Length: 507
Image (cartoon, rainbow, N blue to C red):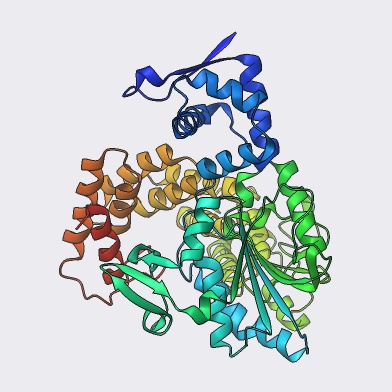
């Protein structure tokens, strides 16, 4: 049976038709080389990549290209081609700034005071270099020398590495940098072009590394030698089998008590017995060799009595305050509303204290407990669903977060923020079409939501529509103070959002 991999309606002459055997061989080869799977719903994307690869090598017939790729191309050629087409990362300086705050204020001083002669930081999947250069700037601001801190930056994409070594960036790479960073570490070399300072550039060693390889080149070839690994927004693209292989390699390379950073959406993917979530820091930082502090499992029958066991680092008296006492008889009915508010307050306290798993367990137990007549309080119930959605998203449990937001929408279809947050989750899960549909519903309910216009500007395949949404952003922010924080933007100012929109309009 033949499978038609249509590229697009605009380029019918570039259609690729593969028989089932060749398609399966191709998918297996791609997955084995760089760990990225292509399920059936992404075959159109694969077809577009095949077209681009064939054109880059001047193959006139794409079937000839696929035949060459499967049978004649050597391993290095295949890696080069796949890396150039499939691993283009989107990044910017000081992305997720709290991670670098933790690196500069806590981790590097600890390593320095421990008397280590050589501190090795690794940016795995560094793309165009913004992340490792941010690590270098962070080390410089912590007053650590080039001799003391060594930063290794790797990627499988040679084009991205060439850009990283060049060290020249446009304004798009500076979404929300800390004050003074541009002036201190960059030189303007033209319109919207900035060259990174030599003292930062020389701190970073760039090298080509395929994380799927059996072994890595020096200095990544010695067990327990790397103190900090950043591998963010990379592992999510791998199959579980390949992801677990790479995580185990990271574990072997990490020094005892070393730090491992992933993106928040990847946190739930890390299930290695030797890597423990560091509860004292962000919900996406793991440590090697720490003693785990996991809540004990609960049975469903006991859920409403012991809603959540707290970690042992909490004082016993504080833990007793947070665990609700069971109510019985008429008292339970009279105090139902107060109880529900209390559950929400406890969950919110746990959430802001970064006890995310405990907060999720508390809310899940509450929502799963059957309600008797007279105990159903829709407002509190809806608040619990929405709070649980936020917590699951922070934990990286995207499927659970999506289910919660869909549950919230089913109960109240007029809340624009439910649709917007669900759209963000679908984007994280790799479903841009689903996100676009939700963003359009968001704007139907709240036409002035700036971030929804911005997201649609970046996602729209039609250039005219993309520019229209970008102009909408500029119009909506025209009268705002440049320093005003834009709602739902993770702290970005009106000036930064406007700059991003102008980039999209080409002005």
